[in-house]
Length: 226
Ligand code: DER
Image (cartoon, rainbow, N blue to C red):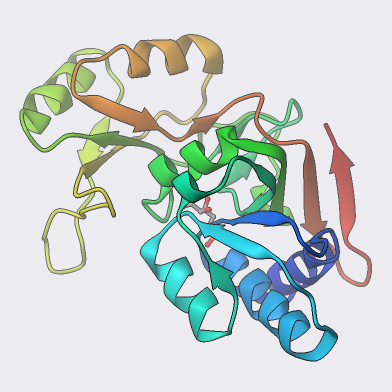
């Protein structure tokens, strides 16, 4: 469908930024799936040669199945470029990520990368972030007390469940609580509030992270520079 075509277009354009003999952080999600397919094609057909670090087990298995060399984050001194998706991006390049429950490893990889690029379709671009539920990764021990605390703060929290009602577990075996906020007036303030809540591991506000956003548009991808 059109949205997938626009995701694919952004992914293919972003793949052009991957240079030989670099370390590349590979994000997670349906847009990155197109990126990894394209990078696999370049490895096979154009002899592109780079080392990948992934942000989820599912990205690692897709990349390895396509012949992309994957190493552990701690085996490399730095990441040259990370390309990831985003759930929402506002005019100040603030982002919400974590729709795919990969936000912890994504933020660890992103904050250890020299450059960060996000690949999105136009539906992700908003004036103000917040209408997409804000994911928060919490340790299972005492998670319901964190949920109650968020309720008292009127953050409209909900523990993320699978279709058959099981708690979603992240690659680090933690839970996700989604905050239904409609809009976020002061992202920096909320970011500090969340990260200082005992039991919270990380949250999906990605502020001052991204350098370039590649937006799929019919015919010609748009590149936004931060
Ligand atoms: O979960 C994540 O952080 C993903 O990167 C998400 O933000 C984008 O996923 P999508 O490309 O499937 O929309």
